[in-house]
Length: 201
Image 1 (spheres, rainbow, N blue to C red):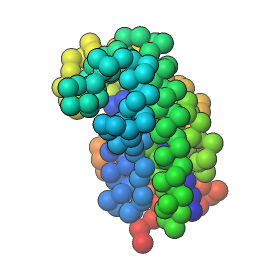
Image 2: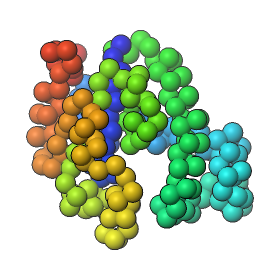
Image 3: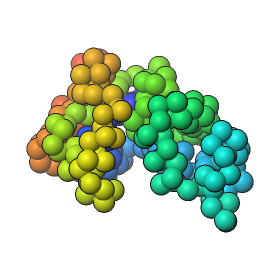
Image 4: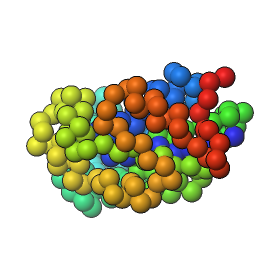
């Protein structure tokens, strides 16, 4: 079994790359953001820990997490963002490792995580693939996906690791500034120890 990490800033195209890997190569994907959302459901230990640090106003009358309110808080406050990241790493990393153990019969498992390096999940990966895109493309994708203004998208990107950081830390870089066809070609060219990583069964 090979464990691969995919990372990059918001709007770079991690989800698109993972969709190609799943549909074209039947690769098993672990989405760190989705894992966090699942763990933050009503009554969970993770949600209780979030409430302890951010207050009861962070949950609605049904006991569910107010995600937009929490997002606004962490994007505007470095300390609160760091606090949430520490909580997330504590709960989500453990769950991701358990999911890997449950799926140890897979030939390739990909961890899709924007904070792959910060959470130290890169340490369990055989190869880390960084997804890079120019600022204009990232802003456009974020605005279209989240229905927000360019100003808010730019603010989000400013607090994330930039392209140079991703380039320096990753083993392999995919440039996602063109077509899906070109993206698929870049994926086909990824190699580990001189051997092609992704191939059709």
